[in-house]
Image (cartoon, rainbow, N blue to C red):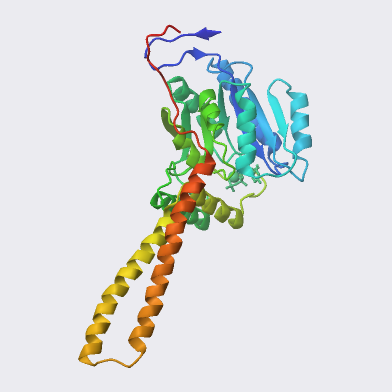
Length: 333
Ligand code: UDP
Ligand code: MG
């Protein structure tokens, strides 16, 4: 059932698109019911406005919670069988995998997905704007935090430092975007072709291509419970982000080795001149030069071997090499 609009070539049919809101949950018993109520309200509102189909739903992914999260999901499903769905993972696999499991499960049941954290730190009211942008022809709509006033100083600076480092390392990410995003079904389908196990979703989305846009919102504090991302997990995520997307660190070793070797050659010339002009302790020159020279050669070699490892690493990911959006031929469809 669809009502086509004709304002714009790029406009999608404003239709009864089925929306799936995917919510990864780990030990979220304090917030689950609140999240469910808030998201159902969003669904009802959007259905009422005719922006999504009445069969749209919320998909909670229980990421091996140790508390009553799953029981609560079951309860919610019992109370709202047409609106609240659940996926139970057999164990805790972490936010990124839980989200992936949810997206891939949802893609066969929906036309468009929105992923959001259970703690409602992200503003649910911008989902409507995301849907509007989806109807305007975007396949991915990123939720971007306008400011981070509610985060602690520590979290804010570390997170921003992280985006800067990622940029330096040549990893494309959307600044201040976490995993609150809309993805069309075909975007999730293309994403599912990325078989890599070291997941860093924020870095992968820009690789998919397609038309994208952003919506801006203020990030709030958790409604209840506490962060499931302690510093250790945050650092692991950051390191994973860099090491899954960039071979720059290897090239940096190679570069450093090269610089040291060049420096050594210059130093050797200087030492020889000093030697012949007689201003030097016996033995010092040869000793210090060989230490530096060997160090440089070693770094250079490690860097060189690293270049090959970097290639292997890129190959084993078996990422799709391209994503065809449209083909124009003379064949009738
Ligand atoms: N989460 C998850 N598995 C984990 C850790 C977290 O599914 O192992 C979920 C969590 O329930 C929440 C989202 O990931 O919905 C983001 O976690 P959190 O809000 O604790 O992170 P923060 O906002 O503090 O970075
Ligand atoms: Mg949070």
